[in-house]
Length: 187
Image 1 (cartoon, helix red, strand yellow):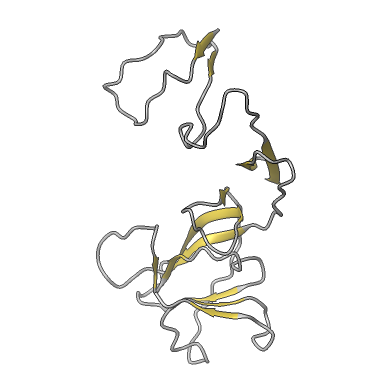
Image 2 (spheres, rainbow, N blue to C red):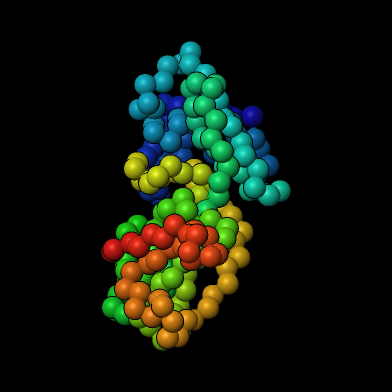
């Protein structure tokens, strides 16, 4: 069995970095890895790290790190990105929100919500992703409790109704529009 210590780390994928060890197939290696912040959260070697696991299905888990045992986060999965294709040619980052959707990241995009997106391209070319297990009001730090999720959506093209002039994403949180909280995203 081999052991790799914390001081034997690197911060990039680079094939010019020489291997720390060479092993034979089937051998076991233990890695004493730094946290995702590379040790910048003022952790000491005598501190305790606690992982809390939430189960979404048999194969998918996500975690969050908390020093205090009293912190609990309710499991409230949602999708962060829903979009139809833009009319502009070229490649665009999935980090930004656009008027056709993309990285909306609102905790209200949950089961039962309706999202209306302005169609700019024939066929719409719908995409979905960036699933979350839970989130506050926004992704203030650029991330949340990220997780894979199996999601089902019903896609409907609406013609000539009250949403024919939607020019940016419109989210309804309840099936009945009169009882719904409506969010218009002006991207």
